[in-house]
Length: 398
Image 1 (cartoon, helix red, strand yellow):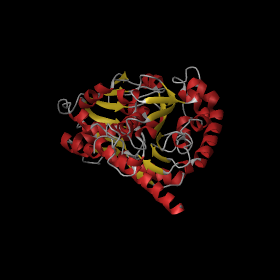
Image 2 (cartoon, helix red, strand yellow; image 1 turned 60 degrees about the horizontal axis):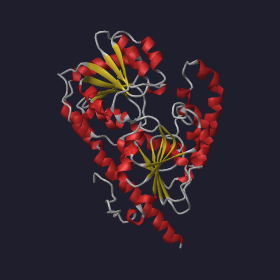
Image 3 (tube, helix red, strand yellow; image 1 turned 135 degrees about the vertical axis):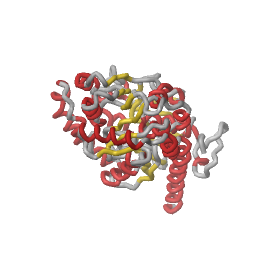
Image 4 (cartoon, one colour; image 1 turned 120 degrees about the vertical axis):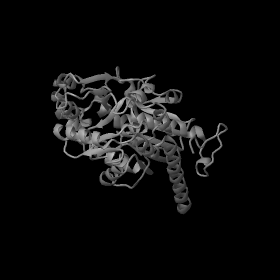
């Protein structure tokens, strides 16, 4: 299946979902102020449930995909704060209260897309809540130190308060686990964290990748024009590691596509062989991949759509050997892993990946395992299963 289970007339090809009126489905997403991997998942959920209402904490209109923008939208009380969309990270203490005050009483099915507090939304009795979990809240559980390690003066002053907020959020997050009927994880890596922190079982459905979009652009000449880093510039993504590694290889060009709070610091440390492009339009991404020799993925991600996109474009991936990349990249066949997070180890691995001379077809074949059509089919299966289980529980209780 590669489209919504609902037809234009509201008919449904799945028995349990057929009992849900299409307009009584709510999608809950943490915030809509950027267009990154989480928003690509939301876009696919909007395709599955085109008559749903999208609920978010904070929204910057016009930033998301046309499909998301065309949906009905409801925002939380946090969105009333002046400049909320530009300062959404600083509103973290408000988010648990804001998510709990979303009015979901008119919905029979709630599907949350959560990396922060969306999973804590309160649904009406009898409704089913399926949570697509990108990660248990990073700042509260396993990555708090990463978010407190920046060097900005403002962060230094706020660090004690942020630490207290993270502790309080962790307790709140644990208390709200029971609001979710079924968890779906974006990787086995995330499923393991859900089991450890919550603890609950989760089915794994990898994030959607538009493989055809990236396959359609022809690769550059053999060897590519540059090495590529693509993503947000925040501490845990370790873009600084790539910048330092390429300082050891002045003969190679590194292009960094993306933006974020770390960018000024990274530009200060970068050499002449590192180019910062900033954010690019969605339709331009395939071209940036196609001209690359390799994608460099230096941080530990819970899943990561970027390595799959690169492989769909026929580009091998050089990744840190932890986290979700281990599930999407095949070492020695579609890329290579480095285990020591040092510039020297990364530079050595880059040269080793060159020597492997990996062909584009192996990369593309691997990427197709994570195509959008796979996500749509498997996510619909998860929702159908959750609805069926709730119906069975209701019969047992009766």
